[in-house]
Image (tube, rainbow, N blue to C red; front, side):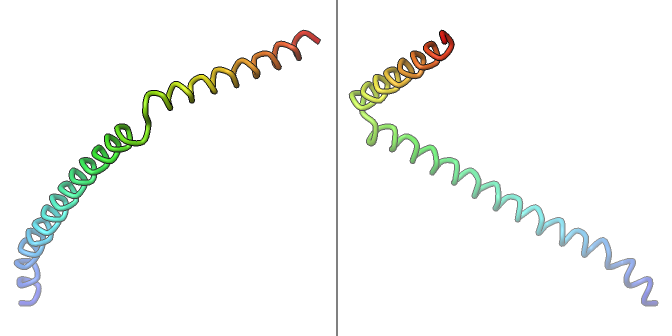
Length: 80
């Protein structure tokens, strides 16, 4: 008798667990979408407010000077 009851209960338990898994996946998906939107908003905010064009020009010119010095050092070592 108990065996028949267990066999009848298995599909009900399985469907209950599937429903829980589906709701959990939906929750995770919604959280992921919300997090992506927040990250994109932060990226745009940082790009707009914290880096100006004049600062970027200054940084690029500094990097060019550093690469020029590095290139000169490499060339001087190869010439020896």
